[in-house]
Each structure stands twice: as structure tokens, then as C-alpha cells.
Amino acid sequence: MKTFVVPGDWRSWVPVAPESHFPIQNLPYGIFSTRDGRPARVGVAIGEFILDTGLLHDAGLLDGPDVFSADTLNPLMSLGRGAWTALRQRLAELLRDSEPVLRDDERLRARVLVPMADATLHMPVHIGAFVDFYSSEQHASNVGRMFRDPERPLLPNWKHLPVGYNGRASSVVGSGTDVIRPCGQTVTSNEGPPSFGPSRQLDFELEVGFFTGADNPLGDTVAEDQVDDFVFGLVLVNDWSARDVQRWEYAPLGPFLAKSFATSISPWVVPVDALLPFRVPGPEQDPTPLPHLQTALPWHFDVQLEVAIQTDRATKPQRVCRTNFRHMYWSLAQQLLHQASNGTNVQVGDLYASGTISGPDPDSYGSMLELAWRGERPIAIEETGETRVFIHDGDRVLMSGWAQGAGFRVGFGELCNRVAPARVR
Ligand code: MN
Image (cartoon, rainbow, N blue to C red; front, side, top):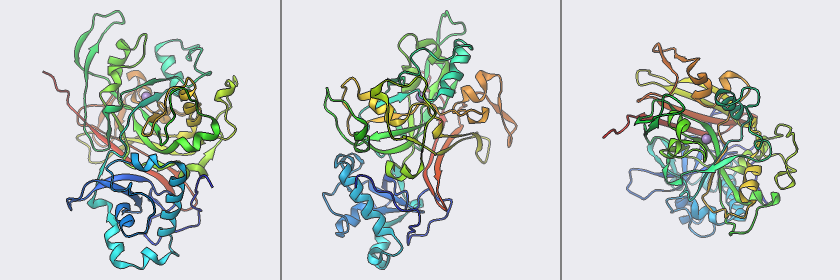
């Protein structure tokens, strides 16, 4: 058995509300610490608790090397697909309501189940490489329509390969980290001249990313039947973007400083196995991709996604976008096949982000650039009477996502970052 899907009718002895993102069908991995002074370590989310896998291993309830005391998921990921599947199955069995080993051991249970409210979540993965794609047809068309040719918004390559660029891995941060408004060159006319200062068009991009958990040496490619071995799990990604900087700097090599100041990811890495029951066919691809980008299995997923903004003056977030991961044109498998098709190396801890996920409706667009349509349709913040075209200092951007099962949700939790003022010298 390569993958392990927790049956939909399994329930845990840990109480899990129907709207919780962390039922027994999910079991996402994260890195957490508590105020007890012990170092950050690997945990698994279940309901409103974190299962301390290091203590479970110490108690003899988990096999294999102790990858659980590490402060990143990389050692666990490095064990490979067989170990991921076995661990996932073991965790599900230990947490299942019919399994007494942990359920009935009150002392051990009290030690290994940490209330999420008492824990701090850390960056889950040491990221060696970060690639960002551009794989939503609606997003690419919206941007092409705004800035290039309304009649032919997509460039000729777009439907033949998943367009992407190599991003900056070292500035990927976690939920809760402030995003500092970047400074950069901006222009008032396309011809320049530029001036230097804080970006006035700071934007979010709603994306879903996947982590690879296997290595591929230089020269080797990846085949479709290896995708399971490479894809460890998924997170929400906010690809923060300074639109005014981007517009001036991007020609002809693509984004550089407009995006490298920060990218944020959600704290829990949802195993790809948890999303397999939510596989859906992608859109029909016309023209048919070249053979090395064709996949027999669907690698699209029905995951509902939301973005909300909470301004400094507001007491609660306001939803500004509702969309779905299934709207992607290129699937994550096609992105991985494409990435590896030239023989570049894939490594444990690489992050591949989908590109902004926009749906067909105006409230399903995954960036402020599109939601407010380049400033023409400001978004009203109902609670405070403010409006937003881009993101202001003090605003919080919240992203959330989940797949809806029968009586449970397989979710990503929340990704939230506040924007701090630029550091102008
Ligand atoms: Mn992006």
C-alpha cells in the first residue's frame, strides 16, 4: 500500500467538532513548542489538541528513528513514502475511538495531548528551494487583460507549460510573522524615471503549495508514478507582492524584489493522503499537453479557500474572496513533472506554490489587484466604512482552506500575517 486514506467513518476518542479542520481524517504535521522550556518538536493536530509525537516515540508507541524531536519536518520527510504511510496509519489507529492503548492511559494521554491554545507553532520545514507557478487560467487571463492585450490575455506558451520562476526560499515565513512593507523602485509612467520608497501597492496572492519529501539527483527526471513518492504535503501560501515594484522591475526576467521580501505559509502540513478523497478532474486541457506533462490520474483537489482582511480599526475580519483549489489549470503533478523535466534536482523541503488561485466570479479572485480590479472597484470594509484597493499598514490578511467530507473537514487551519510599516532610512 503506497498511500493511506483514513476511512471517512472513523472517529477519534479526542473530541473533534464537525467544523474543526483537524479530524482523524487529516492528521497534519507541524512544529510546536510550549512554555515548558522543551525545544520545538514535531506534533500532529487533532481537534483542539496537538499530539506530541516525540513523547509517543519515547513511550514506545511509534517505531523507527526519532525524527520527532527535530525542530523541522525534514528528517521525517527524508524517511520516504513507505515510512510516511506507515506512520500515518499508526497515528490514525492510536487516535481511533475503538483503540484503548492511548485512550485508556490517562497519565500518558495527559502528557502527549497538548492544548493548541497553549502552544506556539513554528515554521514546519527548512525550505531549500521555493518555486512559484502561475497556473490559474483565470488569474493569468485577468492580469493579461489588465496589463497587456484584452483580446489575447495569455502568452503563447501558457497552455503548453506551467509557467513559473525560482523564488526566494529564505524569506518564507510562518503565520503570525509581521510582513514588513518593502521599499523599491516605482514609476508613475511606464518609461520612468523611477523613484525609491515604500511600496504603495502591497498585495496578497492566495495560493496552495506542496512540499517535496524526496531527493532526485541532477540529471534525473520525475515520472507520474513517482509523484506519490515526492509529494509529502500541502500548505496555504500567501505570495506577498508589491505590484508597483513588480510592474517596473519584471521585464524581461520576471519578479525579483517585488516578491522576495516575504512569502508566508500556514503552520500545518496536510499530508497529500488526507486530500486524496477530494481528488477531482481538472479542466479540459486544449491543446493537449506534450506527453511528459500528461497524467492519467487527476491531481486537482476540491479545497474551498477564503481570504479575509482585518484592518487596524476593525474588530473582526471581513471575507473578501471565496474560491476553490480545483480551479487550477495545471495540476501539482504537472508542475512537479515540468520542474523536473530538465533534470534539475528536487530535494526534501522544496516548496512549490500553485500561483494565485482565481475562480470565474469576481469575488473568487485571489489577489487585491483582481478583486479591486487595479483600483477601479475598491472593496468596502463594512464595519469601519474604510475602503481597500491594496493592503495598508496594520491590516491583517487571513487565509483559510478546507475540503468538506461527510461530517468532517480536512483543513489547513489559518494563515494570518499583519503588515508592518516600511523601515525607511
Ligand atoms: Mn504568486
